[in-house]
Amino acid sequence: MSNNGKGLRIVLTGAPGCGKGTQARLLKQRIGVPHLSTGEMLRAEAQTGSQLGSEIKALIDKGNLVPDEMIITMLGKRIDEPDCTNGFILDGFPRTLPQAEALDKMLKEKGIKLDAVIEIQVPDEIIMERILGRYACMKCGQGYHDKYQQPKVYGVCDNCGGTEFYRRIDDNRATVQNRLVNYRALTYPTIPYFEKEGLLRCVDGTGSIEAVAKKIDDLLGVD
Image (cartoon, rainbow, N blue to C red):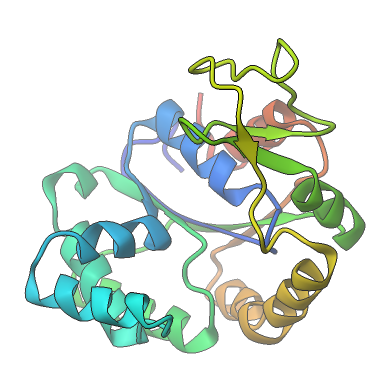
């Protein structure tokens, strides 16, 4: 693999709360390729006023799921942009086996090959602790955690000085358990698929953010 990250095309996957979003953002800084979060991309596309964006917005506004074909079309369009020439980091997509197959097909049509699919492995009880303890600044969105990442001054955001915080309404025990059940049923089947393709790499995600980042770097041969 590359030793500077250039040309790397990577998927980060794992259960909800495993830290893939955090690691994707950090990896983006280290290797200088775009971090493609499909959730953020869908919200951004919905605001563009394009035909695809308008269709996505209508679905999101009604609380409906965006069909795989639309996500793949949007992703294909994004990968064609110049900043993805040197690679990209896909965060949390594909979420199902049909999405994995559709992604594979779309990339093959573009003559692009993935370099690695990195599964961040974290036991359920640690995932529960991570998700139930997280909160964010109401003003700027900076994320915190009851145990792992508190503001330097109690009740004051490090980033903007805000003093109001919020927790996501779906960050509760019953919802998290349901998300883990859905992950095993829907997303986990993508793991053997990528393993068969020779792309799967597994990382123990139970250490500190920095320790997990170092393990990912070592796997990818990033200096």
